[in-house]
Length: 458
Image 1 (cartoon, rainbow, N blue to C red):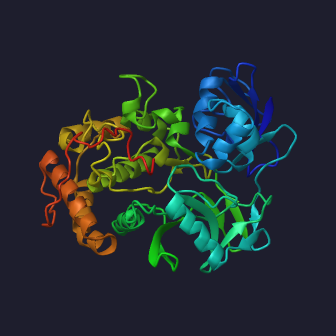
Image 2 (image 1 turned 90 degrees about the vertical axis):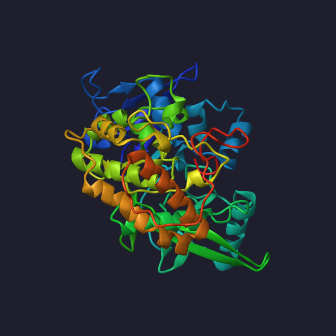
Image 3 (image 1 turned 135 degrees about the vertical axis):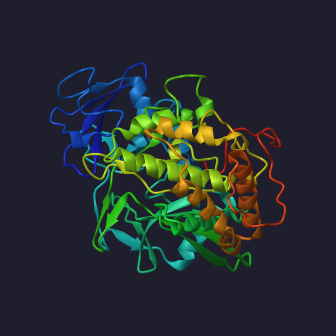
């Protein structure tokens, strides 16, 4: 089996993905591929191991990049069952689903043409009217999936209930079937068993933006549901991997850190890798990745600020699939902060850090020396916990009243409790405002034996 691999910005395939008889894969760039056509930092168009055009990559590289394109959900299960495929038959699955995989990449049978193209607004879109939209939101809220008869025009990775759509002048739209047109926003709907999660995420990202962290534009939206006499909450996020000038909608190629680091999706947490394995998500690996970016120093500083913010608010789910590179030019840049949730407020899930900070696996064990070591791993030549970084943590503390106002009292109390842990660990006065006691679990004191991370959002 041979598949064409397309990138929306180019009129011809950037390469070919082959499925061999033993289900392993091989990817080969087109002979005329330019450096701008590279699909991943981990897979340059000229392989240093094989000089010359048309660089080829084997199964391990293909699993890391193409395996991370597969999205979870009903459509994936349907294709696997309908065509009697194994879940690890990545190329076989992409034969059926690759035209709609996330991002600017599309994968189609050889000669079939690209699965995606820029969108023309409003020609390529249909209005999502109120009753139709509410039916979708209600199904995502109650069932965690779209209504049975509903198509997903632009699947998005992750397991939290969500729908990709275009938003213009306050109106929601879906791409027309078969148009291949992009969406501009993601609507993440809170489940009925966790109704405040959207409010928490919107409040946390709002705080991050207010203290100068580059953050995905996000706002809380509510949908009054007369059927249940409740209001369903959702987060509406502007996609940072899109451009929209009011007429033409384009995708920007992006890749998550698992892809950029050549890691299978099962290695998105550092703790899931073999001890001392060279292939794992770590501060040192991110430091190496920074060398391929447009301005390494800006990348390192931006990632460190995102990391400190996540530490301060208790988001230990900042794994390698929740960080992204944007390929907007010859060299990639760090994408804005997104997917921030207060994991340490939930005793059901491990509070172990997604990657170690100077050897510390839990917030309680993070020290100033450990943070300096992590900064060194990230590539800082003279790491120092200066006034700017301590100021960032104090700004989070100063935003606790804002979190309580926008996200609810428990969010304010929970983040204050997390900040108190960080304050003691670092031995620095972060000026945490007094709050009611919040019974935050420490280290790995978790209920019910769950150790897989923030399971509803990962």
